[in-house]
Image (cartoon, rainbow, N blue to C red; front, side, top):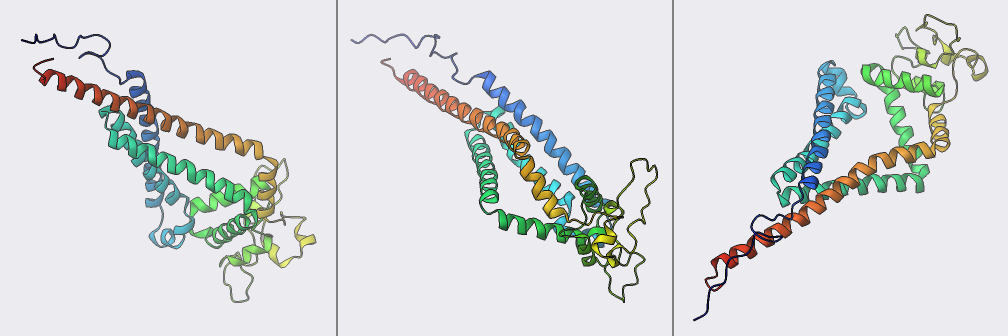
Length: 285
């Protein structure tokens, strides 16, 4: 009569052995937890910014509202990191696969956007022009957008999209005879040339500048548009932009790598558990 063999030892592949590395598991968990908290802050700041705006103005500039971009990016990051956070903690293959696939898609989209922007630079320039012109139109409708444009014009020493006369697209600054605005034919103060020792900013320094020709206006304001300035800045700072892109890509690649390692470890652990259950149920083992 065959003798029953003893059960599997508690050695390297026994009952107490686990393929799942606690280091990988909790490293992935805290990695996602950090970005999960960042995403919640982004959403909270975006919602707060939206609520602080007047309803009519907020709806008028919905397409160029920085707060909307913050909310959308925050929600996407929240959902992706939620899958990674809970998936790693609960060792759930489905959530980890979702996290890994979403992160891969985001990475590939960023890569494709960079390549397409480089290859189709003319079309990318046209899209940037469209965004800047749309922002000029809604300058007075959104305080966040207004501050962003003012910051950009001061930093790049520029005014408008192609030239300072692009501000005629804005209903407050246009030069039509029937415009009742006090800012008719003007440009924002961020277009003005400021002396280094100027302590107080004159916010009305752009008054009537669109009525002047380029030579006359250049004595008081920046006459070059921001599109050319932005393109030149990008060409001059390719290494910086590459470093920023790499800095964004590394955490994504680390997340994908850790999630795939953990998924494989969980699958191996499931196989081990099935193997042990089979042999515990086998009376001849």
